[in-house]
Length: 344
Image (cartoon, rainbow, N blue to C red; front, side, top):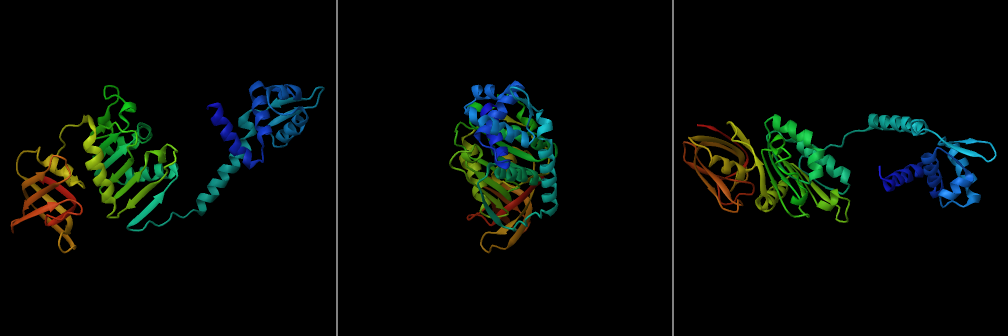
């Protein structure tokens, strides 16, 4: 641990034991040298000589050093594992007791949550990844990719489709040295250092956070959408603004059918690359009436513009043709929430 980080950690512990700056300086000096006299502590720190004795006696009272009453008095370091063992045990017992009392808060069916703590943002990011059953859309930093690498690898092995955007490009691992296909179906990099962190699981559970929120900058905020229609804003922004401006790092070969999609854009893109008659089953809602509507039929046409912001499917249901659009569709007949493609 870097000296500054060590000092900061000790300051946090010091608050628990009412340690001041003198106690921290004296403890670090003794710990480094093993044995010091009061005079030597004063020489190696900014502690005034008259304050050294009170300072080391305070440390001794808390069990962090040993005083050898000789002439001159010697201050001996105690092995940190022994010195902090009781503290660790007490903290473990405290956490265990609190865990027993903890009741997980109920999540509203359509909850929107504002979060600011980097730890909370990372926890929700992990929850979005864990929730995905068939599709993940991610915008991560290289550090976050490393942190969630094992979870992403497990999702890939379980057959989840993962579109991964990593930024900034200057810090992204070289595809010659890092196998992105272990953690993603398709991976892209993006130059911008302000590219936000985002995650969308199965088009239902999503997270958006500013880059500074995970790097402890000033703009610390994130938003979580749990089964909220507003979550489409995250998916749409990542798909059309961030994803479209990325450079491909790696992509996996075609996968077998059937395939499930939350993203109509990706569905149309892959359908256009497949041969032979295909059948689609769509769960969604009626564009005009707003009520739930499921349709199924052979795919007879697709539409997709160059910017990948507009996409649609046309199905022959046997009772006529039905046009299927993505979230907040207006020109089509059905707004798709989940699509399954299989051989006709």
